[in-house]
Image (cartoon, rainbow, N blue to C red; front, side, top):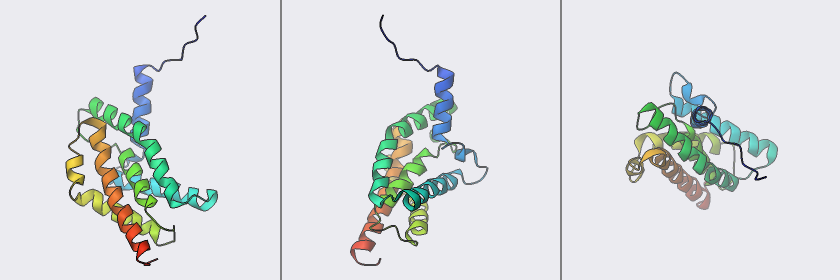
Length: 166
C-alpha cells in the first residue's frame, strides 16, 4: 500500500493564506493595518530577544524562513481579492521589520523604536529601488518592497553601530 500525504482543500488553503497574509488578523485592523503588522512583528521580536536571548542576526534568518510562505499567502490573497496589494496583507511588513532588526549591532532599548520608525518611513516613502520592487508580479512584488525597505533600515542601523553611535 502506497502512503499518501493529506491534501488541503482550496477553502482550507484560502483560510490559511488569509491568516498568514493578515498576520493572524493584524491586517484587519480598522486603521493603519501595516503599522499594526509592523508593531506585532516588533513585539514578537522583543519577546524572542528578551526571553529567548535572540540576537539581531537571528531575525534575518527568521525573515528569510518566512519569505516563501509570505510570498505565497500575499499572492493568493491578492488574486482572490482582485487587488494588486490588499491592505489586509501585512505579512510583508512583518518580514520587512525583521529584516530591519537584523541590521542592529546590538538590540539596545533605543534600537526597537528606531527600527520601527525608520522601517515605517522607508516603507511609506519607498526610495529607489523599493518602489520599483513593488511592480514585480503577485506576492513577490507585495513582499519585495518591504524587504528592501527593511534592508535600508538594516544598513542605517549597521552603519550607526559601526560608527559607534551605539
